[in-house]
Amino acid sequence: MPTDPKALLAKYQPKAAKPISLDQQLCALRFSPDGKTLAAGSFEGSVRLWDASANPIAESPALKGHNGWVQRVAFHPDGKRLISADSWGQVMCWPFTEKDAKPVWSVPNAHDSWVYSLAISKDGKVLATGGRDKTIRITNPIDGKKLNVFNVGEHVLTLAFHPDGKSLVSGDLKGQIKQWDLATGKVVREMDAKEMFLRDRIQDVGGVRCFEFSPDGKSLFAGGSLPKSGGFVQGISLILSFDWATGKGTQLYKGATENEGYVYDMAWHSGGFLIGITSGQPGQGKLFFQQPGDAVPFYTQAIPNPHSLAMHPEGKRIVLAATNANSSGNGRALGKNKEYPGNFSPLHVFDLPA
Image (cartoon, rainbow, N blue to C red; front, side, top):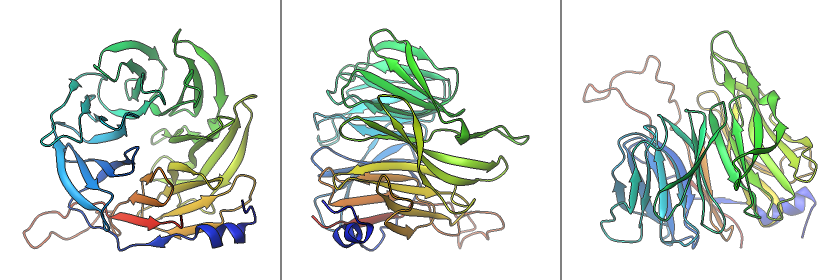
């Protein structure tokens, strides 16, 4: 396996397809385990679906039933069900492969308001959701029944299961990473990412925004920012790498400017590197490939405000949900129909060499 940055770039240089324009903003994006379906949560309260085996990808009928923004989606490992969660605290389970699919189960008030995070254990036996109500809800993904509730004490922005299935980690607004024992519901230990939080006179900002484990479970990567202002999305994008055995964290990636904002999503590629996205000031953002141990990414591509990333399970394609360029809104004129032009999410598709 090549480790030299130039060799990595030569081997994994992505090829961009024409962006796919949509009619609305998307919140989350994920591939099914077999790579044949792409799903995204939307502002209109639906789960949008695409046939990812088509080239270009072709949209399928959406799953409709949520009342709020669908903040998070995740596929069950069995490849037959999809879990979605929204800004009103509702969590739903869909048999997404069925025609005119209806929810298998729905919990309208799983959380008090926004569900920020969602994760399913590798064996498919445990669903964890976290939100603005400062709790983690542990659920049976088969029937939606509550198994436990963990009190975190702060907004739960991201969740991930360790590959061994025994531990759950949470990342919160204050930059605290907590490892939870699923059997007891107790915190086993805490890891410090407090540099990702800023207490500002305007508003508190920052937090751990995304997680990714290395396949062997020896490293936990935490994405966020070094926030510089509570008034605007200003900050230097940041990824910290934590040694799972010791809990010690080191800097893996640091952005170049204060306009990059947050690392919002990451995925581990089998080639031995992280694929990440940043989003900050309007029009600012990028896709990057970062090999652990290197000072800088071996590949970067500027993209206006990407906020979710899905990688095909075989690593041969990545899709980004972004925000349309020039989307700040301030001072924008009304459209032809005298309506305010809302933002929308183009999908950026990149194919990687097999």
